[in-house]
Length: 104
Image (cartoon, rainbow, N blue to C red; front, top):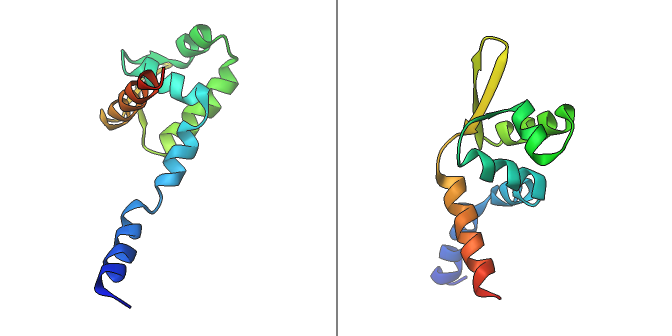
């Protein structure tokens, strides 16, 4: 096998696991949650009201986002506030927005 093919086989490993991230982002509700959190931290009740969803449904989405290390939380008394874990995901969403806008 050629060296070029071997090099490319190694490159495939660099994207291993990314499909899981895109699966999580493939749900429009989760993308909306991330986008809202890019503006400010919010509690589950705020997200539920904005998205017109039930608290358990929003909590379910937040659990998945937390498992993927896309959001973090902090407690303040009985309230839990969510925010983005870092700006990487916002950059990804903004790039997708720019790409989507080009197609029109």
